[in-house]
Image (cartoon, rainbow, N blue to C red; front, top):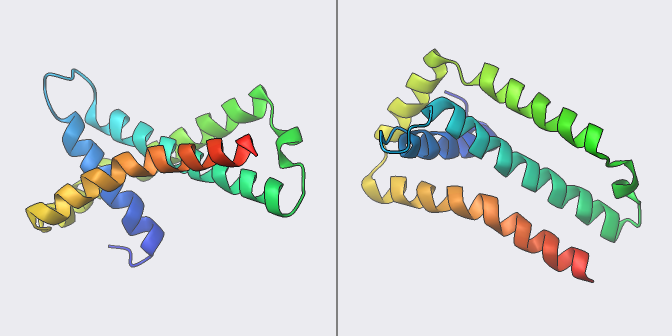
Length: 129
């Protein structure tokens, strides 16, 4: 697959989310759910980067943010992720994920949750000051 560390990071998050959303009790498409989790992680990290730039370089990056730009960015990220994670790529990612030990899979499930929450906590702390 891809040796890029960011690609591996998001592939593992995608695989952990995909396997979670394959639960028939959830009644959600696994691909859509996993893409949304990936986009959530990407958006929170992007927003954290914008906040850090705003705080430490004294550049008012938030003045450019409005609802239209945010909606456009979210739609763009969802579209790109949905096109990127096609059926062939999903099978490759899941095959690589299944090769991991149970502990490694559990680790990536925890990382998936932390990747969505940790940037939000950092953003709240940075915006509070």
